[in-house]
Length: 402
Image 1 (cartoon, helix red, strand yellow):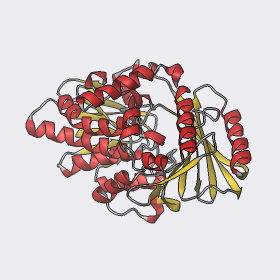
Image 2 (cartoon, rainbow, N blue to C red):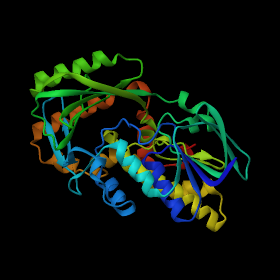
Image 3 (cartoon, rainbow, N blue to C red):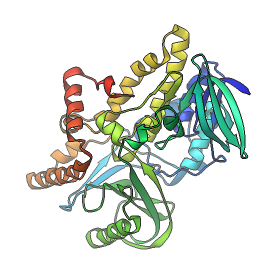
Image 4 (tube, rainbow, N blue to C red):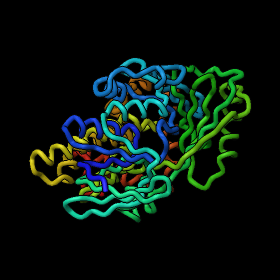
């Protein structure tokens, strides 16, 4: 049985950030990844300025193979049913368009951690002073021993299921699917990520250029028909935006959940098991999860190091330190922050204020109709409660976290 200081499950950006902190502190760190590396990752690849700064400061300049074409993104454009469109540049200038297959592999290599790929996490047993992790490699069981385990294995996390078996059954899930089309004619500016606040198109609708193709993405409740949803969006794009695309050349999809960030219902683990990135519930508005994955992963690694140095309870240390990233992420969904502050890295209040009064009223009406789409999940009261706690206490209540 292999014994190390820390085992990280998953080899994405949150895992790389955690591993970098742990390795730099001298802790023997082992990463388990179920796929062969470099592995495909479903993601738009549009990174925020904050995430870009983190990569530069911690891992160095990105290699060219870690970028799609176009290699950068200037900002985001919001589109509304009233046909008002609002382009907004990122505060920090253009950001890289990550090719997640190679950017994640580069980051995990830069971390200095040992990696066991094609090794699937099966389960764990926390014995108080150590954790036994069971995995499978080449259909054979493999066992590891570590003082701590980090689950950095995405929204449908097996580590979360092993620690909280009922958690993932208690939250709503969405399917996000994207198809890649040949471009015949596309007036949408390829330097921007385009997002539609349109309840008739779905819970999450986006489009952008990548490697000579146009991505058309749709998010909806799990169980709905992806083909029908996608065809409806294509028809809308053609009629309203003059977008002419060829048949889909490829498609992909996955299950997602953004409820934890929206309603402050994060899951951070227990005992010697910590959860980070999307496994913990971090996801920025407009679906960019890379920056909060990087920062939460780094905090997770730092919490283990600090708990050991100070001889403090690890969970207590992690929850104290992660509160700053909770504020940053949940602020992006907080209606009071959106209206009266600037929680995003593009200036929506300024862009809205630059519109004439008629268009401003139309946009606010359209946004309200879009928010009502989520009424069935009964998030309204929870969102407002979290917003009021943030306004009155300056933070989000940790009592909501698991």
